[in-house]
Image (cartoon, rainbow, N blue to C red; front, side, top):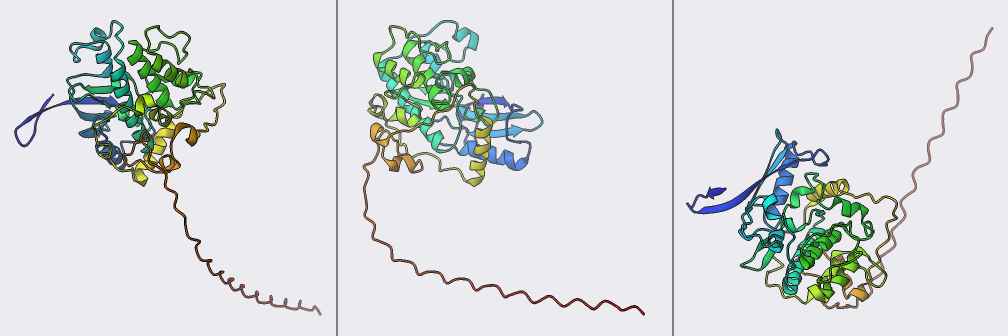
Length: 346
């Protein structure tokens, strides 16, 4: 739709109506919760996340109203199927399989998607809704941006729900990484992976560099396991890609109320893995080349793909603190009064 601002210029935006699912842990009909929900989404900013210009919630209809910038380049899926008009209907656009992207575009878009996922991870925002239709392109600037970040908060089911529950790597590999593996497969092959993360036979035209990454995601072993976004970001396949966007232009960490809201959302989005024990993921900082500073520090726009060198500072021994004096003992209780003598009978 076309919107005219106060300056008289026209700006095209897309308006989305998203139905809240009953499974959503957020009671958005409460005014304070609604204000927290809309304010957080409007303030979420990152170079590789599509901004939400205006967010509102209609309690009577249980619908969220979201305005976003319009993209004439369409989505990553439109690019894969070589769609001429991204505004065509879904059934008309995706009847046939697409074509693999060039290795250059796979590395570039892969790096940008991972940077956005890493940012969301550091901001405690669950995002198991990644798929190629949610990656919005700007072909002129060679930039892709993630959209529909609000889906988890509204209790919507992920597109790859079967993958997140039935994949052999479920419970071992982070949900965002499994979804990224699907997107990576689609970029390198030209169509979606039809099985639940089971790589029996890969198409012969799939790039050899991508094959090893896909096996590290969907079939992790001690020698090759890519369980987190951080593991993927430090791979030379993605880390050596030059990006021109300023990674420091991002929103600050959520406050305590927002963290509590996101914690409830993440708890509601927890995926139960049946008949499978969740393995402990022990990532060796030495093996993947990430400093402990990058592991523990909060996200401030620094990508782990370019870790800083660790500086060891010697601390001077702190003077011994004087021993605290013992608290005075409480006074002894007063003796109980002697009982009165019993009356004598005549």
